[in-house]
Image 1 (cartoon, rainbow, N blue to C red):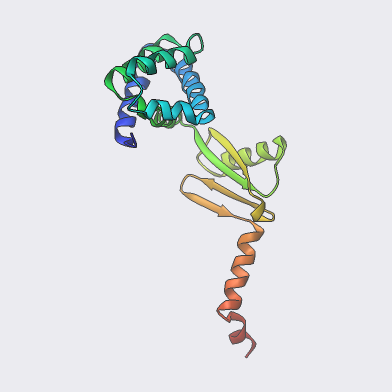
Image 2: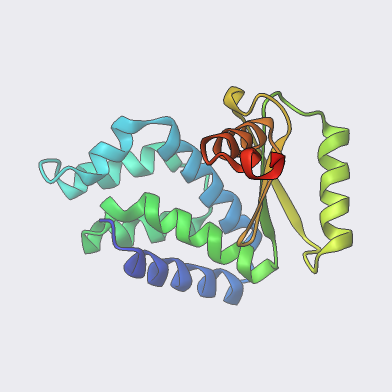
Length: 187
């Protein structure tokens, strides 16, 4: 599908319906489940995008995967997508729904990348520091580990990137040597 505008519209419609029916939290949990299914199975996503597989088969497979695990609204929404021929965009619609849900709830996603895994106490300290020093009061912290950072961290919050990694420092020193910045200061 690769049409973020269309995915956004479907997600907005689902959020509006969930709010109207007072089931926003349930639908959000359903979308997290569906996202896990899509991320966990490339074959499932390929099946949704396949023009060879008939829509009734896709509907039956979706129903088999989600039966008893998602709410009635999500089941009907999935059926609507299949009937309209939009099932190939389900992963994008799920992503758009989650993003709109977080915006609606005022949840800010912050990404922390470190060279080694960090403990829960460090995560809580970072969250409290962000809440204390920024207007972001509802923070969700995502963590990642990249060995190439050597040490330190990279923090992405909103449109800001804070790079406190050793790799960044080494690259900065390397560029200073390449530009001969130190020769002028010696004379």
